[in-house]
Length: 115
Length: 110
Image 1 (cartoon, rainbow over the protein chains, first blue to last red):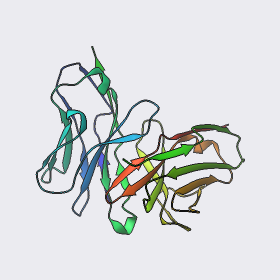
Image 2 (image 1 turned 90 degrees about the vertical axis):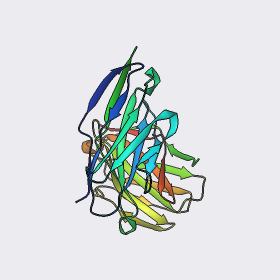
Image 3 (image 1 turned 30 degrees about the vertical axis):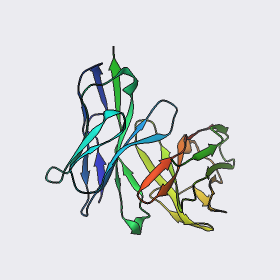
Image 4 (image 1 turned 60 degrees about the vertical axis):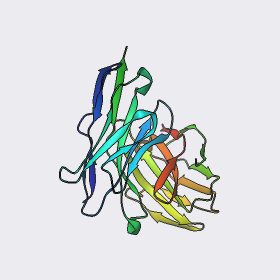
């Protein structure tokens, strides 16, 4: 069955440090993968998405993600975080047309950036 | 960018009561979705719809009904609210391959 796992429930980094949030997926077909961010008391906002081609995709606010088929991973990265990046980050997998193109979400990773 | 609004933004309901959560989108998207989010968990799909007057079950449909009276509106109905339905509910609409989410409705069932 298809699934998404974010192994780190909480990540704490200092402002200016680099960041990697991990995401592993399980899906037998070609994965469509997404990263969303949720700020406190807000809905989910799309950061970036991957379908095919260059395994490194760029997103908003200097975030990028790297897809690895061999590792079944789609890790999110940022070279230098800002305190305003503190939020919950969700990795998601889009399931095909027969399932309504629904999203399967990971559990989320809470990111805390301290000054 | 898609505009998805939800009402109410928060609600307190009594056990056994009826609750209706509403979602409205303004971008002519065919697909709409209802998810629930529980503390410390990702979102799970309750119902979705790809056309007006038709709804489909998602992964956790038990205890919920959905209604799509028009392309713009998609409602989630809890006929007999239960304590276990306390959660945050998100509506989303989809264009091509990307879903856009509303701000969420925080539901507390007492």
